[in-house]
Length: 189
Image 1 (cartoon, one colour):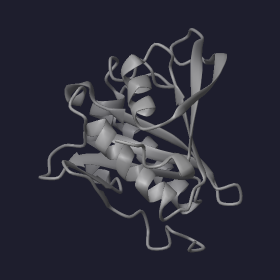
Image 2 (tube, one colour):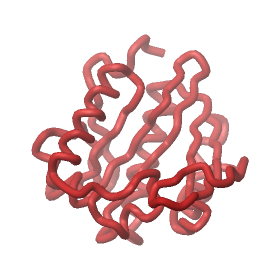
Image 3 (cartoon, helix red, strand yellow):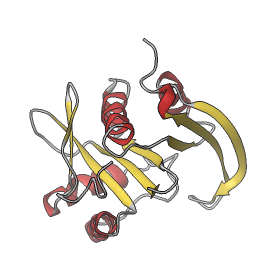
């Protein structure tokens, strides 16, 4: 494994209909659109952004995470261009233990089209390939049936239920924990 698979920065990843790329200041309005939409954010671990400054601060934290090698968050855009439609993340990377946590969000205008699945597949290919991860975990709200279906289709196993793990909207929110091993990737067709 390369000592630092991010030495040249966050690589652009390609899927059939989407590109995953590093976020830039030009994406701040798109971040606000995604992370500022209450319906899109209903299962996220924090509430929606209220202004462009919050989106800019968020992008700056993403940049810091890349520099510190703790957070790798790609912007999801259509291959033919256009506004940012979401993000896909590997966080809490441990090169020693060869594990990371998966996160993804797609603005509700793009739900139900298979775009999140394409993006997550590209990130998992990179994680299990270039990063040589052995394990990837996902934390999903038990009421988010679409996200549960996505990770299960990709071969993740349900491994735990954590009660009242998050308080994103002033009320407790439970978590389902899923795990995927490199030996299970890619999933059988």
